[in-house]
Image (cartoon, rainbow, N blue to C red; front, side, top):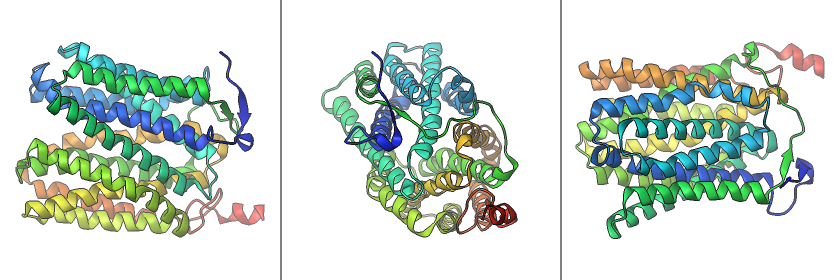
Length: 405
């Protein structure tokens, strides 16, 4: 069935670009939350993994992130909106099939397929959001979309817990349900929403623009910060403070619940105060949090740091809208893929190198994290109060703006 194509300016009613992005975010959250909640228990109880196999699984899971730049090649043959829905379908289908492959190579394969779907979706989602949302409204709207995704994650955690603990549901049934919901939402979006025609046709080749150098650097450092939280902050909670599985799950629940309230507010604040101030607040907060990790000895204070650490992820909205303001509109799609790959370089490097440092001094890992946040802070100070093409940083580029005026 051919879908109707409409211009963004002509979209009205509930079948709007914002609603489309929100429903995609919900679908993505359901599949990822289902997969992540069951991951360790399924790996140990069904596939009989040890630490060695889990390490291999997590390494394989990061490969699609490094290959996110290949999204530009797919755009030679399919539209971005179609590719985003296809990625969601792949992610949901891979999550649904996970319970049917309780052996190592099957689990590896399902994980890699799910990861390709996830990373291609995230790449296209960022690209479409920055193309479809107006610059003045983008921070607040991105915040609301992310808040809806967090609400979907909370609902998924509750359902998975209830199905497993109360009804004793099998892993296979829960994976099938979570992945099936994502597939169903993707099909619904395909059948009921029109194709939105962006105002600018995107480049279909890869490139690195020298004038985006600050965005590239901040993106790489954001990837390093993400790995310190994902890999080492959680490990600290278990190794040093002896948090149980239920304790870690409670922290995850608190993080998701906080995001439902916080993300829309952060988006509105970024729109009001600008990307420069928002990123300065984020990096100052991270310096204090990472230093706190290195020094804390109280498990309750550590839990507060963990929740605050996760809360500061919401300020990443500012980095997305900073790029939206400085980018040539034709560059958004290919740069989204390149940026995802840059972000994931740290996913390969940080766990290995910092893991060796951890053996000598866990505190040193977090002090290095504070150093990364400090470098990010210095770079954020180079962002203009009103970034735009030709005025990407405070180090130069104003001549282009003056010439345009």
